[in-house]
Length: 291
Length: 276
Image 1 (spheres, chains in turn cyan, yellow):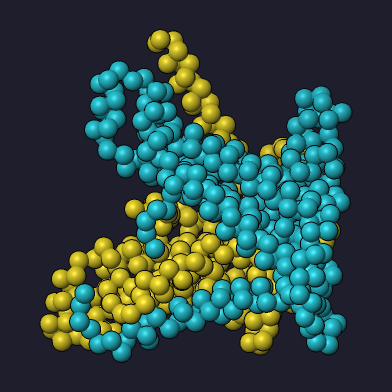
Image 2: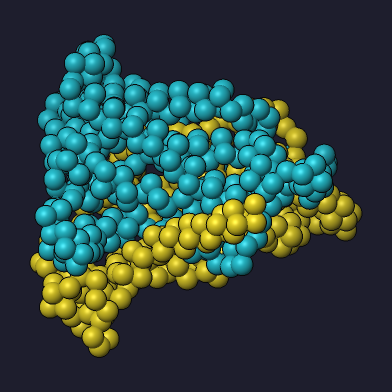
């Protein structure tokens, strides 16, 4: 370590630490604290109610609907989405013709704004001129056309399609790791007579376990926080079929103006985040060092 | 065996083609549709534009103050990206080079920001911003966006300072340069790669952010472009060309920045997450 004027250390750390305190630490404390209060827009002052909000939570059918949707979406994303991205990376790491173009093109939906994606899909699923219904009409399946996002039978699946296929981030991360695998490992497997398929399964995939775990954590946290795409397309409807925990929280916060209860849902989201991360890390043993 | 390999190869390219088409179809569709007339869109959703009409763009600019929102987005994104990279370069440098008591604990606590689901904190963040008197202001959004990119930038920038050889600074100190001067004149230029990566990611996140823009603004004075899109359905009352033109205006900057700095984004995503 260099000998430097120690006076500058706190000065250099200050802005970052203040940002952390103001936007992360204080709000996190407030979420936990206010979940124990009856705290609404019109209340003159907050009254301490202990765990009353939590009692309401475990009796609230909307909460269980939102919870199960959130969990299903996390599972779909961690399995389907990550598998898709990984398969893509396993094809691209052998550098077939045009692999760089494919990598770039596949990233495009991931780097544009979710609000734009949502508006685009709102129109792709549009019952009158949307792409899906136009296509079905063109091939003579008029009977299958419907209002995809507003029909209770198809809303959940339709909303899921807005994100599950766009695995650009996963592909990019897994691909980067696959490209950094030592050539000699692959050569050795080839000498032993492994076919390219066997090599992918038995040699390459195990070496990618850690990064796949990381992408699963990213996929899970992304779904746990998913708000904008659902808010703009279905707003959680019809009924509660596409409501997840953040949408439920927003509804209680803005619709009901019940801040204590909204923050109780917030506490629950934070806890799920910790649980999901721990489970994935345990199963795949990622992140054992660092920090 | 040979035939099997050939089939696999065909399947491989078929799979890649399908994935790429699915990924870029929505964007291509909306950009093409923005040049169609409204009647064309309503008649057939998937036809190509008969002749490239710019009425959609003209309408989008006249119906809503989209240029104002675009300007808001530019100001908010530029300020928050700059502050984020500057503040976290300072912190990242100290974490990479200096030793002080509690360093590891402080770094661990700051990187916890990575795992806090921010949508759980919608109301408290709103309360904090309101208490600070920054509700419905650009400054409020700049503050929040600067913080949202804190964990990723810290990770990337600390890493890039760690990879710079120490001899450079030692030489600077020998020559009598102070701490601040060494940081700005020697270290910042050396860490250009990491700074660009962090800046590109911060830019994309801020430019695209929707949820906090929704919660922390009410009027038009600080409304950002992504947020304004969600109001357009009502505002544009079935003028789909204008809507698609507005969406195109919102996505083009992201695509341009990504195209220019693509290698940086890829390497920063990698350095941020592949670590170790």
